[in-house]
Length: 219
Image 1 (cartoon, one colour):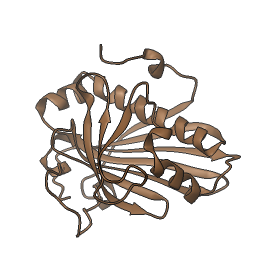
Image 2 (image 1 turned 60 degrees about the horizontal axis):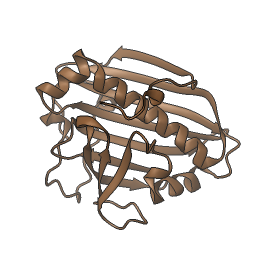
Image 3 (image 1 turned 30 degrees about the vertical axis):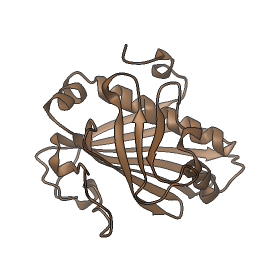
Image 4 (image 1 turned 30 degrees about the horizontal axis):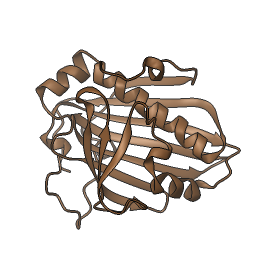
């Protein structure tokens, strides 16, 4: 059984999905470089992946929040499982203090089936943090979570990733199974963030994917 509950695959939150072709000549399409001081042992950069690079951007607007953007991000970073859909996917910290999220911490995203994904924290900002995939993950790349104050709180998840190998690429690109699992996980995460904020999601979730072929990246 791939999922513990198909409830996560069907929901009333509006999704506005766009899939476009990206351009490898545009630096904004490529994953950000790792910070100079970050430990690179066991990291799985996008350049080591297989198939096209997918640059994906999830965005939602939260209104009537009890918090501002920084307070919300502090609450999420204190325990990622406050926002995660834990009946379907959870974050298990395997390195670092359990009460904080700092550069160098490591997590395994636990999901049913072959989806478990080890990641390392490579950047923490005022109201953001970025994770990079480790060896053994189905993807090769990075994902960033950030919040900003703008007529409410704009919460975004942005990822730059390729499949880690041929079989992962088959699941993602051709069978589309991993793609839909991933989509609904991060949609559920945004719903969870909205609950943490004590606010209301306005306008649903905007999801834009850029597919970049024949990319040669240097993370």
